[in-house]
Structures are given as structure tokens and as C-alpha cells.
Image (cartoon, rainbow, N blue to C red; front, side, top):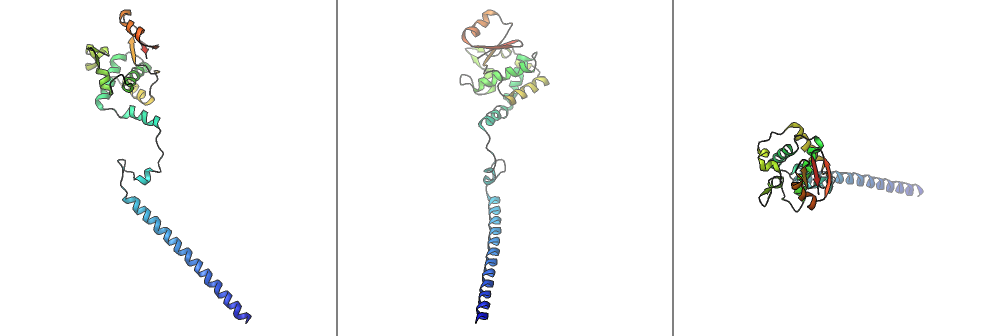
Length: 202
């Protein structure tokens, strides 16, 4: 009788072990099938304009607002705007060092961001207030015929990448300008600093 009981228990244990093993095999097979299904589903997901599926994109880090702002300044600019920016910097600060050139870029880009000025680089440069141009090289024609140097190209590129280093300057004038012409700047604007041949105002 004891032998029969032992044999019966051993048989039940064998059946339990066999059932557990089968369960593991089935779970592993289902897991592999689910992974294959998800991979196939991901391949069928629509791609965005960068060629990245929505599921992949959700794993990517979000770009900060500051980074987006810098990117907007340096990349979302038409070829015409960029060419005009190069020319106005060369015309206004061709004889200045790299920092002097960058400061002119800063003034133009600060105006683009300011609500009191036009929204594009070209509109800022060519703006007229009651028939008066904002930049003297536009008025005397040098802006249209100037040849841009490699130094100016490098300075403009760096200035766009670095962002504003002028403290928010919106205006500048040549230091050699007559006192009469400089009076409006002194009476209506906030003096910021002088650098090279220019005085800057906010």
C-alpha cells in the first residue's frame, strides 16, 4: 500500500513539473511573438519629416526652449536675409575686429525679436522711418555693392551661434558722428557702451 502511495505521489510530482515546464515554454513563445508583433507594428507607423516613427521619437530627449530659440536665429533665415545680413555687417563694420562685427549682428537680430521693429532681417535693414533709412550704407548705396570678406562671414556665423552679447542693444552710431546728429540718441535712448568705432544704445 505504501509503495502504491509513493508511486502515486511521484507520478503527481512528475505531472506538476511537466506542466510547469510546458507553461514556461508557452510564455517564452508568446513573448517572442509579442516582440515580433511590436517590431512589425513600429515599421508600419507613419514617419515624421525626419524619418523617425512616433514611437522612436518618444524616446528622444526634448530640446530645450533656449536651444530652439538659438536654432531659430541661426537656421530659420532665408538666403536673402542671410546675404543682406552679411552685407550690412561688412558695410557698417568692415574695418572693425570680429567683436565689432558681431555687435552689429546683435543689433540687427535684437531688432528682429523686438516688437517695435519688423520681423525679418531684410525688413529691419531696409526699414525707413518717415523716409529716413535706419542704416547709412543703405542710404548711400554701399550696402548694395559691398564685397563681403571671409572675416565678416566667420564673424556673422559665430554671432548667430552665440546669441546676443550686446546686452540687448537696438541702436548704434559711429563715434565720429556730429554732436547734432548724436543728440537724438543721447536724449531718447539708453547709452550702453562703446566698442571700436561705435557707441551702442538700448
